[in-house]
Amino acid sequence: MANKKTPLHPPLVQDAEDGKLSYAQLSGGPATVLVPAIYSIEVGSIIDLHFGTYHTLHAVSAGEIGLPLMFLIPNDAVKNDIGKTVAVGYSVTLPSGNEAVSPKVDIKVVT
Image (tube, rainbow, N blue to C red; front, side, top):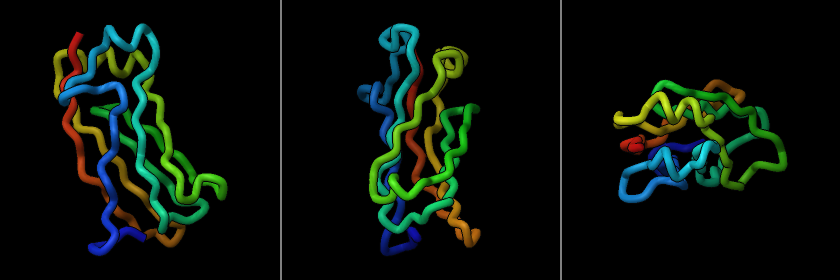
């Protein structure tokens, strides 16, 4: 699993530009957050993604090992954060219970 030699990489908020996410540019759709590929992850690992106060859990399947994972942040969750700077990050918990936490990315949600 991720350790000092293989740290987790920060998430990428695809729709953000220069640290800002425009709610209007989402056109009513979700925001997309990518978790970079984690090669040391295992089937059944749990990814807990946070976007401000919104979070979602995802259990990793065999076909997702070594691939980036896409998370869709509901439009309403983004709308609730207009005018705020939100922290975006994730943690990975292996079936053994070992956990690693990614660096967080601060994103300003604008209209």
